[in-house]
Length: 351
Image (cartoon, rainbow, N blue to C red):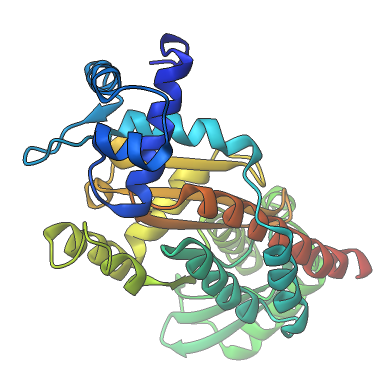
């Protein structure tokens, strides 16, 4: 469905109805439009146009009411009309950027602050994932004999990510030999990416060779996994909205935020192909997530491509304030990209 099949008048009415419904949560009738927006049209004409918009699938009529509310299609149209030029007021931008510059240069603090700013600006639930180093570089490995043939491998990446796993070797190996293996590998692998580590096969020592393959595997796995921590804020904002108060929908949405793995999956899958700073708006059930059927999401990726990236976004009722949420997500994504650029990337370059 395209905007092209709407007359200017229908387009204006659709945008007004959507904006009014977002503000009031009340279905919008022709009388309200005439009285509230001083339209130069008769209520009969407006009613005909509303019927036409309903017929085209942009509005729907809740069963108990004479008024109309936007359908998912109506919201999509509303969003595509406002997306390109919605900006946060300069004063708000200034306040937010000031908060970031006052906070310690600490990823955790930035994430918490970003989540809080987004929740406040959008009155929705915010989600922010910590920047994930895409091309992890090797820093060092430790091999610790635990019992029998079991060895604990602790792998540390240049960005500070640590992974631990228990390996079962073919035969017991004394700690001294494990430490020598680790020392040799640390010399050879320092600063290499997972791709470079994978190409280094055929080490003369069989144990070195086995451990090397496990390190390469672990580095690849770490590069592909979505980053661990998700910072959220503002759940109470959404639960107090009329659509959600005491409803099953609220429980579904809540559950989503309790199940972090689902949330990670959702963020990873929705942003996998989007560019840094690229904004996506998902409305209603266009996603595959039943929990979000009554919701909309505004998501963006931030960071420096190929170095470190994360995701941030807002979930709210379908009648969220897109005019505030879209520019807030866009602005905070830009700020976080700058911070990643100034800290993680310049650290890499100064090594």
